[in-house]
Image (cartoon, rainbow, N blue to C red; front, side):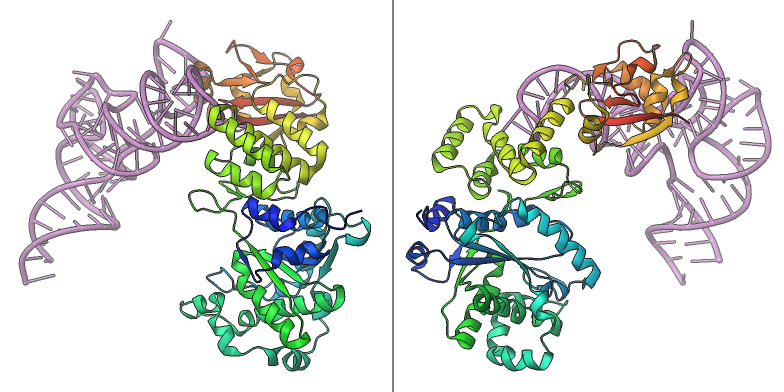
Length: 431
RNA sequence: GGGGGGUUUCCCGAGCGGUCAAAGGGGUCAGACUGUAAAUCUGAUGGCUUCGCCUUCGCAGGUUCGAAUCCUGCACCCCCCA
């Protein structure tokens, strides 16, 4: 078997993923033999988010190309806080919090990287494991000695903070020493020779390379990726409701799918190149389709599919698509309680007594007020008059009709909708 | 300390004794259109037991058949003179 199935550098190059490289001969160096590559992740939350997707996906691509990926979770560095790209001092995380975060991230990485494929199986490490026992004196002697302060002061991440009112603490100032040492440690432990990172990590990456040369007399390499931004310059991965996470507990597969479906035409080609495994020909074909028939949104659909499948698997993608159909007005029939809860997991719901359905039943207007979709019955009346009142995705026809037991989609649930896609559930419970 | 102006429904802002639940704009909501985009167009926009009733126009009283509109007092804000 060919140890290098494809030219990773050329692949990254056409995808536009090479922002900066520390060595001109990077391409031949990578194609010479399998290398060990690492990327660091900040454990600031118990889940990765869209911002981590690009480095993670790139690491994965390195693995597919025969190289060995190492994902390092910054358990130690996360306790310090990286000043790169931050305008203010970071809050320190507690050890418990970090432990929980690392556990969450570990599981998500397993969906992207193969941890069991022989020679180039992925490795996951936590720098806290080797940093925790490092004494301050030892660290200063072994590592600190190799860092000229004048060089440290010249780094952008430090310079920008020195000039600002926020200043920078000694702790954050020391951050780059820790990250640099990670590289050295990974080299000693796993023969790791290449560090990947976002373009904001350039300073930290080169610090690691310098340290490798000084401490080990070894040539290490670095590569930075562009930041994933939208055409208007804003960050990718934020919605009105907040960050888009990879964890299904925080962002449901449906929401994730929807996020990508809604990507702007101007950004979608870049996302396909950066984040999916689609080949050049396929992406160009999609670009062509988009130009010819933008309204079909083939690109967005494909993007959403690829990413959702990658993160949540075939099952997650299926659920997201089914939820999409239902959200956009498909019949809600013979739907199991479980499916319904999954589809509408992001939708507000209210519990009410099942006895309301006895006798004449529950007036539609009352149902909408109960569910919180209308502030008053007057508002519900208006909604009906304007044709925006739906029960189980059917436009309600008769304002005097009441909701009875047979309207329920599952033994307990009624799906109410105001307008095109504002949903709420009413759950009828026995008392 | 003296003089003047203001306080209106989610916001801005008309209204200055009945025809005022209160113009207009913004926002919001719905409908149409559409690519789950943007724009546009239409309608709605205090509550309710809705052909009617109830509560809103800084607060409290008063005058009137009737007040957001007039009078008195109070609170807060603004401007001018000292």
